[in-house]
Amino acid sequence: TGVTAQYLSHLNPKATHFNALDLSREALNVAEERAQRADLVGKPNNAVFHHMSLYDVADLGRKYHFINCVGVLHHLPDPAKGLRALAEQLKPGGLMHIFVYSALGRREIMLMQ
Image (cartoon, rainbow, N blue to C red; front, side):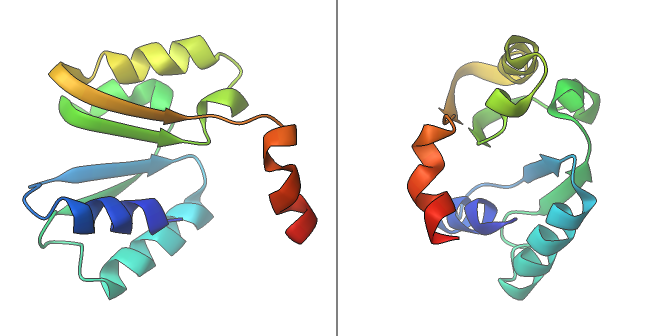
């Protein structure tokens, strides 16, 4: 919902562009609103939000120095396909950060909610 996008943008002020994508239009709306409030759209990072599957990330026509995928792959019907889709868009020498969790891994968070 945009928190990671804000965090990464502030940590990388020299980044000239980043894409955020999600299947949830509602989550993207929240993320884009947060980015607008934080002045991340248009400057400094040209944040762009896409309502799409990560399986289709190649449709964006870009290669990336850094890919951050948090809490997504383990929810996909074919996680390996999703990982391949992302890896194919990584520039040589690029870095990919993947975060996955199990149902038990989020137990404490669910209890707090």
